[in-house]
Amino acid sequence: MDAMEFFQLSAGKWRSQRATHHLAFKRSEIGESDIQVETLDAEHPEIIELCRYHEIDPSLSVGGSRVAWLGTMAWDREDEENHQGKTIFAIVPDSDNPRQGKLLRERGYAEIVPVVGLFHMDDEDGLVLTTEYETMSSIERFWFASPNMRLRTSTVKRFGGFSTASFCSETRIETSVEIASAEEVTKRQEADVLEKRQFYSVLGW
Image (cartoon, rainbow, N blue to C red; front, side, top):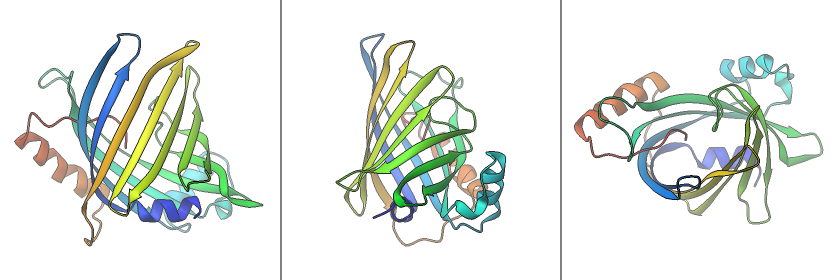
């Protein structure tokens, strides 16, 4: 499949469980998050706006996704951390190969800034994203173990060495619901977290 098909399969609500290894501290941290993924077609105003922001012709994009998330991390201090956010992804495949190209982001994984990364689909139909930031780089790989379970690994490298490595298992918790707007998702997720202070999550989708 191509990257847009992968994003379409990712649409819905997911519960993500993560283990993050902080290599500098030689310690691991666990977390959970609720994630909402909505597919956007190529003509969606937010996809067009994101392409124009990155000075890329919107007609080259095949669509993308809107993603919203919320949760807390195991090392968070009570009432001091608020891991929530939303971002837009736009897929711009190479003209000669729809299985690779550019991935435009409204908000990056390792740095909270708009960024352009590279994607490719590997031989096992995993989606691999490589992103270079000013002070670091990240590599992420997503793949489906089944239609309702998605797995993800990520590494962040900075200052000449790796700083974190993560593994996530993401389980679909809604399979046939109408996707709400990102604002509605955020409000609903805020209520969920207030009810469950022990609920662990992660910054990022």
